Image (cartoon, rainbow, N blue to C red; front, side):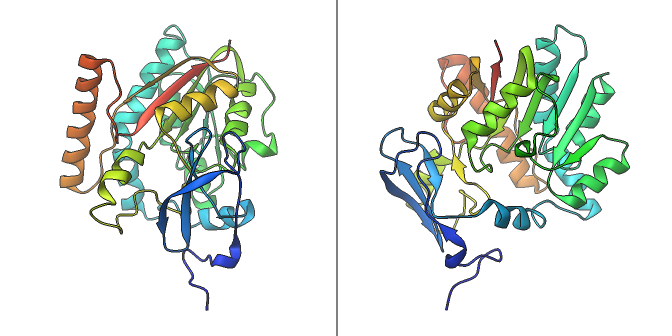
Length: 288
């Protein structure tokens, strides 16, 4: 009898090559239940294989985001520092003036609301129907679907943001190429992603059930080198990766740990010029 996790069984999964370079040579990095992450032997990228179909994943994502009011409010508070830093980066890149912004995977529209308050003309893209309804109830322009649906004309935006999305998409390079095409020349991409691989390698040796890779939601596990490679292959230049703030979980102890880790990461980066492992990162790139 097949084990069922998140509505999926082994029969719903099928193997794929490396999502970054296409190589079929890999070694197992981590296994959790029916899910397995592989590390590419060529480019060192970590990806989920076997995995569900894209159609199955869209079904799963209808249950992914919170839909209770207290949980939605907690989600907004959790992302407050990250959104603030991203807003500063967008405004700085635009020379202080507002422009056109698209937020992919905009969820309940909190970053859109922040940028609209700063005078930006904003649009969102999302697949979770309940989150779309919430965002639209706030008067936000949110389209249902993915970039594969080609919902916007090329060169429509000055900034395109995607917070904790790139690790979820089937083909990250194609996803980033689509972002590149939507930007005007000189436009900025802001991509937020979890940097869990170093933590997994250390902590999983002590405890197997931590679930830091979060299957099947996370199809990719990026590191600074592999996200930079993906951005370059998508056509971006002036690629920069930094801490970009930290999340603020609802749990007080989790909030304290996250803030401490974020501040230590920024201090470490300021002193050494290097990236602190295990802390989520924000990568930016420019369409030349």
